[in-house]
Amino acid sequence: MSTHDKQTIHPAWLRITHWINAIAVLILISSGWRIYNASPFFPFSIPSGITLGGWLAGALQWHFFAMWILVINGISYLLINFFSGRLRRQFFPLSPRAFLSDLTAALKGRLSHADPRKYNTVQRVAYLFVMLDILLVVLSGLVLWKSVQFPLLRELLGGYETARRIHFFGMSALLAFVLVHLAMVALVPRTLLAMLRGH
Amino acid sequence: MIKKRSIVIPNEGELMLSDAIRKISQPSRRAFLQRTVTLGGLSLLTGCSISDNESIEAALTKVSEWNDKAQGVLFSPNRLAPTYPDSMITRPFPFNAYYGEDEVREIDGDSWRLELSGLIADKQPWTLRKLRTLPQTDQVTRHICVEGWSAIGKWGGVPFADFLKRIGADTSAKYVGFKCADDYYTSIDMATALHPQTLMTLTYDGQTLPPKYGYPMKLRMPTKLGYKNPKHIQAMFVTNTYPGGYWEDQGYNWFGGS
Image (cartoon, rainbow over all chains, first blue to last red; front, side, top):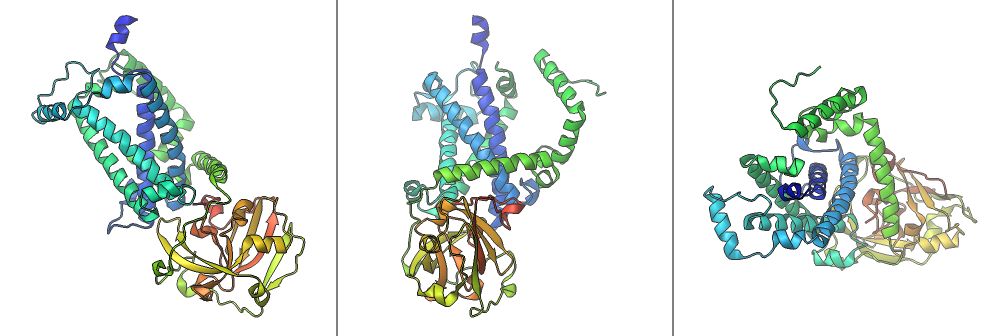
């Protein structure tokens, strides 16, 4: 048992919440694009072939289905992460100096992957960033869905119309993370295996 | 059968793969995959899935009904939508309906009657003249469309809660339904009907409500999305039987609150 534990890179709860989150994000972004297309506030639309839902009502149904999955799964992830001590162990301390040196090493292709159970500082920053970004997307989404019922949140985010833009930029940042994340997995394919089977 | 040819993966992977192949070979699952995963991974996400797959559509409808309940819980009967100064009114205020602006119905206000039915004590029809004798108020609020855009407008008229009390409506009933002269129809929950900002609108921006904004009367609710605000209302009824709505019956969320 103990040797098995030592080999484990990602515990089962982490892998499960990771993949549920990935599916929820895929549904939310692709249906969100369709919703955006109903009334674009930039001079472009998203090609409808890569959107979900077929029409606005369908996209909204997908969006308001997947939001529950994202939120329930996300809260479970944060709670287990926090109370198991993993959050503190894996993500802290964070130092700008370590971030810069890891980033330089990563860009030179010299970042060590000797112990995949430990995150390097670039990973720590990237994963903490995406956690906060998803939080921002959820909060701004709450303002779009229920702008009258959450007055404090609405005012904090600058009102309904500003919250729409925040929601869009939050999505864009999340998408940028996903693209970099997938590129990293393509560079180090065994990380995909680790996220599937745990070691 | 599918041959496992040159796929090299560890033991667990092989088990997973054979499990997946077994699942895919089940006819129902295969049909599902054909319908929803047509153009590679992302096409799970294309439009065909919602219209073609009945089980997915049924599941999403169930979630939408659950979302109606969730919104009912989140709805506060006393929390007010923000109001704005006249200077912030969107000009021109956008026209929106299920038809184009050239098809706006012209209604004769003199012969118009508001018909009442259902769980209402006094079902006497109302004329426009009589509605205008009731105490009026106005508000400048944000109209939010389900498409995402919003615009600020100024509506004036009779607080709907006052009207419901005056006609002896059973305010413990679940729904108020509306039938409109443009063949639109919709329905709302009683809590929203009684909200202090829910207004039987007779004027827009200080003028008689123009045809494009719903003459002679529209119900304005700043706590609901645009499609929940019926225009050209001809008849209303109070009921405990779910009445649905024009867009709602096609898949738009019924509560539609903001």
